[in-house]
Image (cartoon, rainbow, N blue to C red; front, side, top):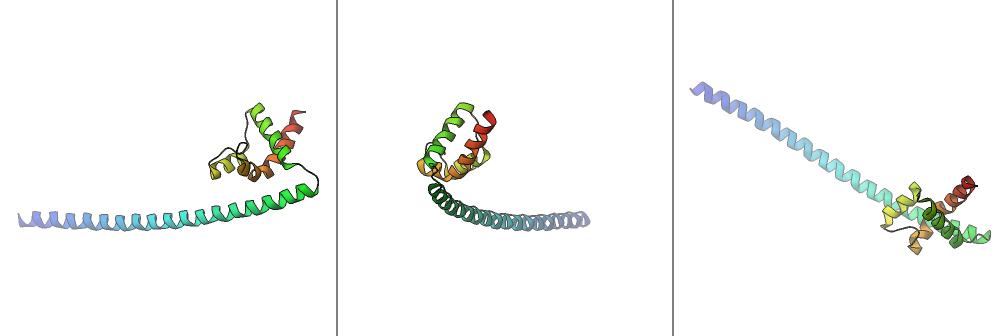
Length: 127
């Protein structure tokens, strides 16, 4: 009878130790995941700032070359409405800003770099 109790206690202790180890492993995984999420958020912020800087440069170059950015964005919005298609870059801009690239002036300008190229590509392929 005493031997059965000892075996049960040993089995319980072994199970508890395995659970403790598993909890520690899960805790480490959660910490690593938090670090990854933090690093990803920092990367997204950095990329967002780079996109904004590139937008300013692109708009300045477009102005110097006599390109009407607003006209290109309007053409892209019309083309998008007619074809019902969107590019991955526009979808990504919408997801990042939570808005529609064609209706939000600031967001439209942000996606303007890719929208301008998309318009010429879509126009070129439709001809």
